Length: 126
Image 1 (cartoon, rainbow, N blue to C red):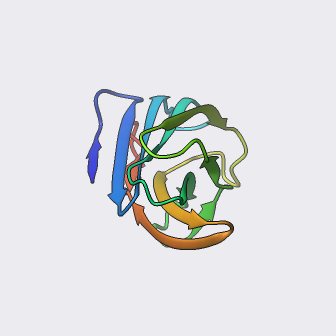
Image 2 (image 1 turned 90 degrees about the vertical axis):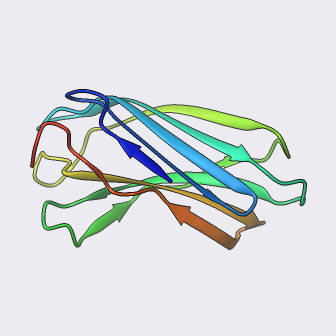
């Protein structure tokens, strides 16, 4: 698992679990407003016939409450990755304090195992 804040307004996180890994690169994370330039990747790491998914969650400033976004699926098979470019615009208080990446292995709609990145903190401060 990895986390780093490369410079003000950017962040990177990743995680690995059996059969799947994922990463998120955030290019524009202001203190308030929309988080843009988000690149998500889902890697299929094992020739097991399962597919992999990634998703994001946003954390409230209290550090306890998380809101989870929908899963993005890579069904192309072992040795492949799929990438999505996305953004976050609607948050209750106008401030995204934390972001978390999850990567998982699925059989159909059944979650088999997953990992979570370390909590990415807003590089502009809380």
